[in-house]
Image (cartoon, each protein chain N blue to C red):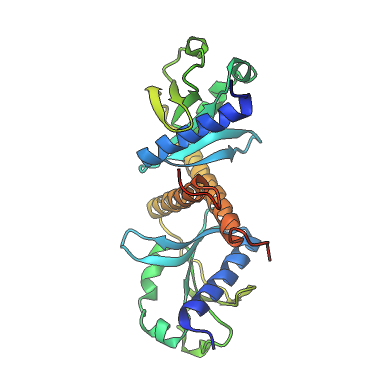
Length: 150
Length: 150
């Protein structure tokens, strides 16, 4: 049986592959103003913001029952779990979508109802995602693979 | 004497280092709707958009006299050139700033007057930069350095 960090990595990888296929550009471990990080934040071509929280097992899920707070940071919210996660324990709420994922692929098992962000919040989140992604990209490109930093 | 593509790379590298210091998150070779690409596009912490066109030599500059068109895609516009570029040949216009750069560093030699984008254009450019940076980051992260694609 895979341990928790490994399950989280696998599920996250499946989610990011699905999102790439859907053309939902995304970053992982996206920091929010609150100090919290969301596991995946995506921007679809129209600028809609999707947030995903990955839960590796029930203990991980039970340690974080504040999923309603994530709704303030997205138009659509999903939990993502491995196929063998006990899904009947997850919230039965139309605003809470569900993605099933392993390290190779993922499917949207239950859609999330859209709850539109206001314009100011969308603007600030889009800017934050843009700056986070650009900064990480620059950091990766600055040092060519296999070479020490200048 | 360095050849043109090498000068472009060096000047671009100096600009990106300066922008990182200034906390202006940026991407290079940013595609625009028009099919054109700008050499560097940056977002400052307040969401202001800065565009830089790198010119390696006079021939490169003379081949592209349409710099006014870039003003539609930014709040501030700069040319960036190597220190030995004949600067007196560049436009004498307050909307056209100037950055001098080599591969190690860069300085804003002349500030650019701000010409604010309208809200709709700013929104679409910020979204485009976010999605471009996130997509490139994902592509780089998908294949760990030194490993073949899965």
